Image (cartoon, rainbow, N blue to C red):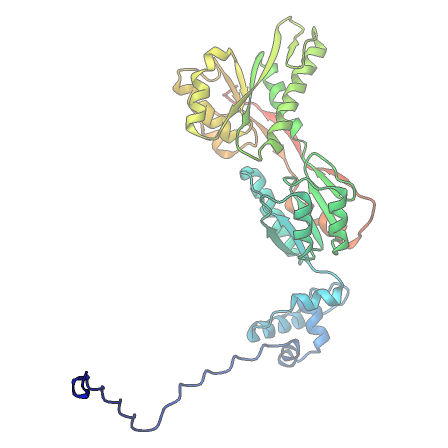
Length: 377
């Protein structure tokens, strides 16, 4: 190929005329305010700032001074450094609360919300930790990494004495378990779910019902509550048998010679599952049902009525938790009312366990139950 047949090269770009303008400089970030800045603005010492913002109870500081310090901190945007405060105190103010991964219902949700508000008023930082799928050993190690001063386990993860020791070696002054089983080294806050089932079954028996079904939710995790509630209902039937003519664990004779029986009824929290159970109800021959809680009771009662069964004439229905909506139904729903301590009460127990750590652990019974008769029974 000859030189003349080559394509001409494109001309080089012309040099830019004029001076090159550098990009604008970014302003440096503002300095992080310190406790010394707060002290200068408020006209007090750094020690006073520390006492006020850390809510130190051992030092008497007037309310006007406290207000000046808080206003200065607010104006400067100063926030105490949690890690530095923990180093000075020798422990954090973190209370770790593993999040519940089961539907615990409005009653327990309200109780846990009250607990968190009360702990905040006591100057604790409540950290909710997602522990779904963790074993006891895995959960204890994960929780210990945050160096909490206290752990409140809701009982969904089974802890051992070794797990409690792991948490205490990491600085936890108190480990508190909520559930039916005590763990060595931990304070036990016991919610006796068996009493709920026993009260419900006894209420039905008192009204002459002798073929009692107990709804056992199919949802994962609820066996923590449903298992003991079913066991409590069986105990009530057993107590009837002891007072009458005896019988097996699931059947008891009354003083009048009529047998009482109890049957577990698996049911999911869905319209389809409730309708399927209601559709075979006549074949079960049951004249009463303790439906685990008010939500399951309302779902099943509607399905029974859709099948043409009358409540309470054909089937007496009782729930648990005493939700407001149960009183708005027709017929009004009988229930087992559960008394829980206030969040303030439990927070004070946690605070006392943190301030006065001891190898001697305590058991606190947290609930009482009583049947509330209404139209559905």
